[in-house]
Image (cartoon, rainbow, N blue to C red; front, side, top):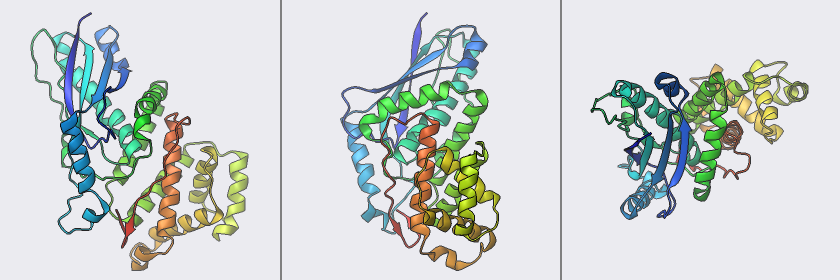
Length: 328
């Protein structure tokens, strides 16, 4: 079987150094295998060069804390920091659209979002042109257009640069072993997380992080341990019953997340106030917002890491700055 290679540009991914060896990963496409009746496996390499590493350093400087406070700072600014080379089996030209669609969907909805989680910033890939040696067909699914007008946040990494290779391979291996239903759930989890990286205000992120934690708790069984802990926390939070609190506690127990009673109480209070006192301006200056933000961010980070099978890797805590209710 002969093979071909496609290339695309990589935006906002920090390599941390000028890499002598690329970051390698691969994946199999069950949909394309069923369509073509031969095994379809993609092998990819993420790499940079001196010019691109210089662009990475310039992007880091542009999004520095000092520059973020300038009136002219553009938080949407992105930069090409790498290239992606994808090797794939040659295919009959009639399958061009399928390869273009399935290959790019996996890159944009799985790989890019896993890397976005690793670095707490939006990592984007341009469209890879998967072509056949028979003849060229321009198959252009219109599913990537919105990525290029979306904003790009810039945050501290959750996975060390030197662990990117092994962590990405581990995450993709875990993902590949999931059922189709669970794959969809993990994709949506990464999508919701990616959405939060867009939000400039801390109260918006707190609301979103709570909703993710609550939704995760809704999708796991309520164990006896979780029920007992929920019962214990009811008087701590000052309520007689709350399905939202029950689901959140279920998530905390299921994912083995450590917490203080104050963490749960304060974040639960903010959740209720944002639901029932949505137009109260005091929500923007609640003194517990920063602590709740850090706590809920840690919860979601650890939950996603467990879903992706990353227990062997050290997670770095979020170190965002908060200035007048904005996340910097």
